[in-house]
Image 1 (cartoon, rainbow, N blue to C red):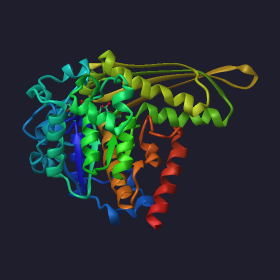
Image 2 (image 1 turned 90 degrees about the vertical axis):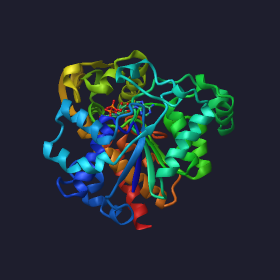
Image 3 (image 1 turned 30 degrees about the vertical axis):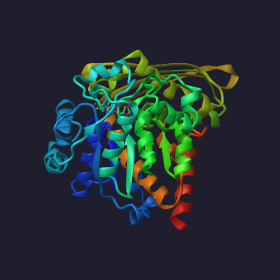
Image 4 (image 1 turned 180 degrees about the vertical axis):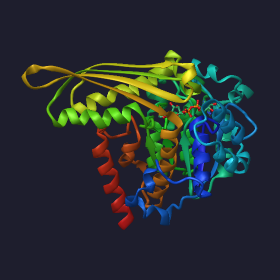
Length: 394
Ligand SMILES: NC(=O)c1ccc[n+]([C@@H]2O[C@H](COP(=O)([O-])OP(=O)(O)OC[C@H]3O[C@@H](n4cnc5c(N)ncnc54)[C@H](O)[C@@H]3O)[C@@H](O)[C@H]2O)c1
């Protein structure tokens, strides 16, 4: 299959590319991939483990290998030997210039950027260029995944964001103040009939107009924001309190991370999307909202290591207050990038079974699953398996 990555030179994208190629060559095994579990074996028939990559970027490096090497030199997030084995494949992958429209102050931390709006293009022209790039790359087995830096929460416009007609009017009237890059990428992908997944907290395909477009065009899509670290642990642990009738009084989550993602998220406007996405899960998992503090701060020397400190204050029998502390210390790209491959495969699997609109059964992979109130990891996994099983046997 083919995957078009928005943010193709980021650490998650390039690690997904490197991992896919290393697995294809038999250098590493499939640990970390959900679709490699024996339960999902039937996926091999319809969506074999073989990938071509392309994408959009705003940091115009010569190719994906240069980007991977840059990330590797800072993070050493896998063995050097793997770098050598994937060099040729990734050198052949060159991203196309994308848009960073209304992507917030955080992207200044990315260094020199080059965008379509920087060429003075109108919204219609930007969409045409994005669509042309996607069309040239794609075939019937192509999925688009947004792994670009997190955008700020956009200002919602009833007129331009709630219907397909309104959205197209916004494009035709060049009302740039109401559009964000993620909306334009989704619009282009869905218009071309390409399944889309939003691995970021940016608005993406949750915009009502774009959800309607996906239904009209018969395109499956999923999101939002990959559930990879602290939130994965939180939504796995919180059900324990619910099942044992223990009352969570307060939950503090303090995340520190470096790298580009950390730099972008250290900007207040960009960070807000992420905090909203991380914060909602507790209320959904427990059935009530305990006192909560969620913070994300930039910590340069950590580079791609993300450390989360969590403190849970809970009440038990006889009203007694007790405490639980945990520290999650993981390499972000290592926990995130296999999910990009999993989501891409499962979305294509959905398309091949004629599924369109929001694929809420993929909630298992996301922090803020679209159209799904269930955040409990176990329940989400059961839903995913049931859905997969039904399709596989169809
Ligand atoms: N790593 C994780 O565990 C994890 C989990 C959930 C979500 N995410 C999200 O995934 C995204 C990528 O994370 P990362 O660690 O790879 O970040 P990164 O900063 O390494 O990569 C982002 C890439 O996107 C590019 N980019 C930014 N805006 C763009 C735009 N408008 N169009 C095209 N390209 C653009 C940047 O130049 C950069 O190369 C972030 O939004 C992050 O919040 C990551």
